[in-house]
Amino acid sequence: MSAVANPATVAECLRVGAGFSQGDRNWIAEQFATLDARLASFHADATELEVSVKDREARGQKVTLECWIAGRQKIVTTSAEEDLHAALNDVRDDLRRRLNDAKTRQEPRHNKHLRDLPQPQSEPDESENPAPRADAETA
Image (cartoon, rainbow, N blue to C red; front, side, top):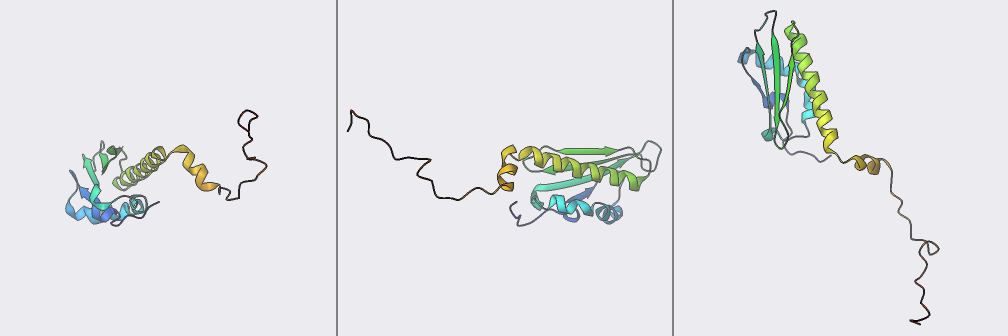
């Protein structure tokens, strides 16, 4: 994995949308801090997160977490958990899963095998590659 000069973090990329205030932002960023390790492979200036809630603290509450990463499709996760804390954890965990799945899909299948097995670095054996023979007509 190549190092990113300015890695994305939740604290840097998170916006709060409908249903949340700026005062909720720090609390939500703390809940989502475990995403930092997964987001670190992306550039901060090319990554955005937005969390919103519809009908906050009501029976039909719906939390939505959207993630935009340049060069990838937008990822949207939702939760209908009645407890706000549980709903935030639900969308966070779902986003982490989807980011892992997207990364796995982008890697060529044969690369993992090549990384795991060291390639032999031996001299070519003369018995495997004999010198070219001269045909009777060309000799």
